[in-house]
Length: 148
Image (cartoon, rainbow, N blue to C red; front, side, top):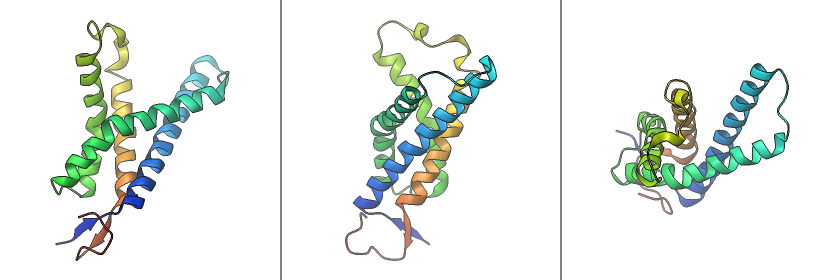
């Protein structure tokens, strides 16, 4: 059976690339939505790109990183585990918003659960698999300098 190992430089590379991929996909989809809805490219495009990248990095650090660490410690290091972890991370974020925000879910738009949540789950699953691909390499033994 193949085991997967990683190292700290690979983890840093994977988190960085995952933030760029996730932020880039969010920027692409939000700009495309804006163009299809209003027929023009959004103003202040650079601010939207910076906000998309910052949101992706914060999401990875707050939700994706700890979830990945738990899966790594539980020895769940297969690509399907990364796919599932990426897909459920937006749901974990919504639960966190519901638990830690004042009031109830009134701050979330009405159509969010029908359109935005499935799109976020798809993008997050893609990012999870990309992070897995960059972070892990198959190994038959634990090499020196790798994380078990």
